[in-house]
Figure 1: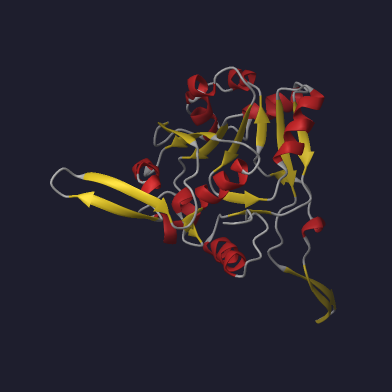
Figure 2: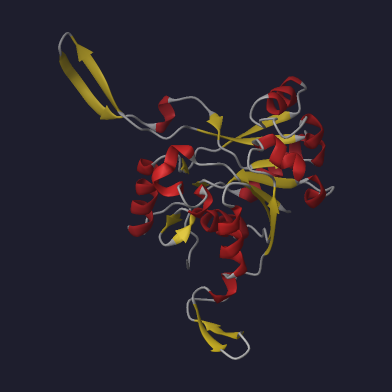
Length: 260
């Protein structure tokens, strides 16, 4: 199954990190978050990725163009420019096929997906965003999708807790506690499993996937929700990035694949 990753947004809520690079290239543990996403999907057998580029897509292209040489010892023949990569000292290179497709600077999420129709082809595919990680069981997600026979499945998640909760009587706090994830309702967590027919629900470049297409799919009875109770964390703000970095540095990142 191919995986589509939307990686073209401006990342305006993370300007501290995205002034010169796209958000999918912001690093967690010295690796861009798009790498973390791909490693997680690859652990379930996904080996072909279609990346929708937009803002600073050249940075993502450069990263993957040099991917083989990263983490490897090199021999360079200066007279010819020939580069020979030695065996990796931190493990073999990932055997992935990565399609890097320019989908426009101003194109919205639905429009980016529509522009990828040719690359997607006629088979069921996975689609996610290039700025969040989770420990979703992709095998179970796919099985759920196959079981209901609809055009689309969205992974529903609980929004991460951001603030402590207060119980107040008069002027005094009677109880303070960290707000738990389960206090909130379900939201779109990405990690869609989709049939190519969803492309027909997208009108043009200005179409936002999370609005009219998903609303129409839902009203047509073609959208199912896979409820994920585990870890899910977007990287929308600098605070989010610091949280992910802390989890990775502590060796307690729930999305981490053993051996990475």
